[in-house]
Image (cartoon, rainbow over all chains, first blue to last red):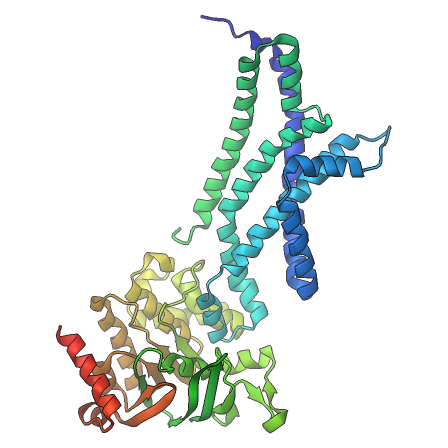
Length: 216
Length: 255
């Protein structure tokens, strides 16, 4: 049985994986929270606010994540006491994810069939009550799949933090490859790590989706 | 009980209703028939202000639906006020429009509990009785998606009735159904008619209209072309347009 030479780097890669996991968790949590906040702000803040958020979101979504990460990194003031690389990565990726989350929620709310709000009005609901009791619960169910999808993309996207020097899974892998020249074994292990995380998220998402299905 | 007076509705350049005037007495069943695009559904939707009419007025029990004030002072009522008015008018739609995230029972309870604020236990007993009446008590815990079209439409009727409305509006409620499911829904409506519910129905079921309605109003191009007692209107249409409409209808059914 051939020896897998790269196995000796496992402890290093696991240490780097911890950073990836931490970064992913922060990005997804902040991205979701910010996305929901923006959706609420656009909904409650009147037309001007909604337009402004929509426009900024449009620009952010149209940018490659790498460019956005660099942009935020160079925009932050340098600091010797604080890890600005990590901060820049979290901020950039959270905002990036939030821009998509906002669009997912906006689309889901707009996509609630007119018939549903008609029926709510017909039993004497005010628009506000209809939104809370009908539009929101129905729209939220429709967002589960796209949100899970976006979460997986955000997790994989954290590899771009390596470009500004955050020592996470991809950067650690690149360092090992440069030292040891066994690209496929190392890359294979990294890919496996990412795959397992994303697969777990997708499984969890599918479970949630089943639970909230209209047929359940 | 219901007075519709000179109602005009425009969609941009299109005039959907060109001055509709008719009355519906308490306990009366009136059917609106006519070719597609004649404005029947728009008229019905104006009656609970789901559609905002531009001129004229719809008055139910002395109260103008959707507007307050008169003449140049007239303005659309506030959302809370509109909602209050709609509580007295039940509506059933062509595409059922049940609340998909709720069970059958929750659909029927939604209005009494969350709109009227009635105690849940009391409303629940009534809702179950309603479901019993339409023969769907066994489905109380199911989601609408698991029901046939005919069952969904009967739930929609129960949901509207749970509000104890004074008037029921039916908007082509059998048009989306498979032919073999039409009967069960019509049966439920017939039952309501026998109980003396005031109803306005937009329908393509001419035979049903003839049998159940007291009066039929035939519309074309946003206007009333002919109106009269149901049986007489179907048997002896006076206008050329209604004669042609009924002829096309009969030919369609003979094929």
